[in-house]
Length: 521
Image 1 (cartoon, rainbow, N blue to C red):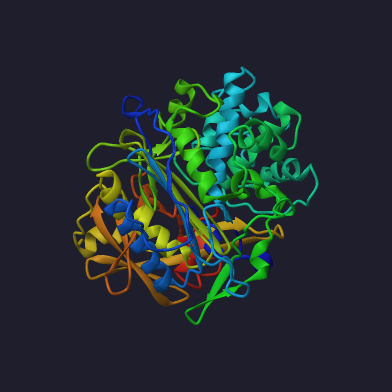
Image 2: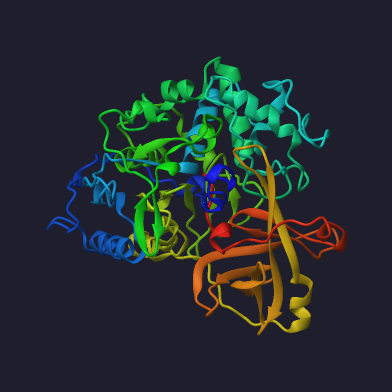
């Protein structure tokens, strides 16, 4: 999740999107029919045509992007389709199956949020209570925020402090407590509760609340309250618990080929509550059906509570797609048809995934990959609307590019920077320069052109390749009190526009577009 200690910046930004109104919730009594469970990559005669086209798209993406293995789970028209594609490891290949485990990254955040909501139902946590009710010593860099921030603001990513802190605090049961204590140094970027900015650290605080209220380590509480009762037999937090499992190894891409990368295997325990779960396509689809309200599952949450998680979003913006905002842990994504999508996804080095549900269509999709190039495939399936249109009949909000005049572009020009704290506790900064060019903004890293931004409405842009080809990513500028752009929100993160004073403080430039475009789940 960070550049320090050999961790790539690709894993620092987060994936995204979506939601559903209470009236749109579809409950079904259909039982799972695992029609597709083999590792073969050809559809059977019982496979619906649309699902078969999804298989074809995944195979094509694996070949195009050098992805050795994919786990797929689809809930479509009352049936499960769970399949594995490719191999777990190019050095020691075995077939990926529906039970092969991958790191799911930030989709873990929705597990943490679900456990919090179980505690809410028990009367042990209140969403709108201050965090200090449960963590009396919680402190923030802005002394006015610590006493006021609520549990809900942690879970809807509106706490406002820097969210990318990945410090490794050891392997002990106190790892999360030590991590949360270190957040007292995280700068406040925006006013509390007012602006959406993807915040890994805030979910770490939520995980610490779980520990404080239950008196158990986060991982133990999550397993006892949610994972084990739900029957997620291939979902674990620690690699030491994976004996006998089929495990997808992480891969880098070197000269266009997938290469197993052992350094990508490790993850600090301090990050478990917001990115550490290891799971399978089968388990993720079972989890999706539970969150859709299907019958036949343990009643671990009441229907009103579960739907509330997918409703009443906080501040909106973009996280690769446009967001109405975040409910309780879930990204709530609008569509052109007015049907909301409930979405998340996650990334760690060499492990990238997507997860979405369309409750009104009783549809769910999860895709797990074991390559550093996985975001290219998940972008096609979760940021673009191909899968939603093909399988759920909904589409992204329209985005027609329109050129702006140099005068219109001038307020957006400048250098935008962000910071993070790596596994070693060292803060680093990174940025991108934006200049007007042919009716769009040209983004440069280390003096080299890296991407373009084309406007499709006020303050909202599509990310484009240098040749003008869209890459499925939406971003937006956040105005300051004077109405002028104060931040670029890209990948859900806030990149502050630099003034002459802040620019003189220095900070390295991005080495590549890849450093901007992938989440840390």
